[in-house]
Image 1 (cartoon, one colour):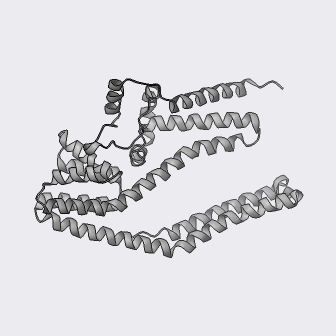
Image 2 (image 1 turned 90 degrees about the horizontal axis):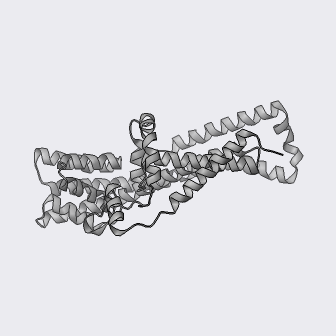
Image 3 (image 1 turned 45 degrees about the horizontal axis):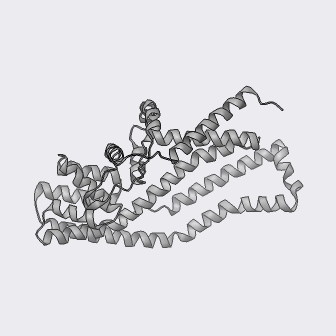
Length: 323
């Protein structure tokens, strides 16, 4: 049966998107000087202590040129630059426009191939392929944020010990950037690099707080900025901040343990209807046919799915304790 023009066009676009995505994953070889210049241009430069900023450096010149045209639209849709901040937290060396274009290409390719192989759920495949990069990005950013939170008290302790040993603030930051692994070492290395490039110390720490977007970092940065403005014993102030951060981490662990039963209940309530429906479809496929064929059955399924979603969101809201 011949394909209609719309399907042929989608298949062509899907093949182009898949080929472009594979070309993105397979970088071309470069000389040493060209690779060094590209790392510096993309912000993936070597930090003090021999570290890099942890983000993957690959050849994406074609994607950059394409993303340049999409940048105004992406920035208009994301005026707060939250996607840019999330990409930094995940340590992924993509611009927001590049990430959006790659996600759209994956969704288009999977949707087209799903249309050819599985005529009905091609839209579902497209949605899943489009959501997967965002889910992976948020998961990786959350993991790095959690790691940074766990490293911050030790980094502050290292700064306190360096100051008490007679070093200045910049020397203490240099020690942290060279002795602490990513992401904390990377973030303090960026602070040191910005100061060395002429940015004020206050602005460099404010940039750190903006990139991290965490309460713990805001507490530490606020204490440092207040001390620089009013004076005082910085080592003693950072010691108190470090104790506060450790207490917050302890309370967070206790809250996580106390809400474990609620989270488990949410997972059970979310997966139980799906599991029961799959079991019935295997035992007696005709049992669920009225829900799929009869309009009243489909309305009941939609209502049940809606109520199920509301229950899941309510449980998540209950167990998400702010502290």
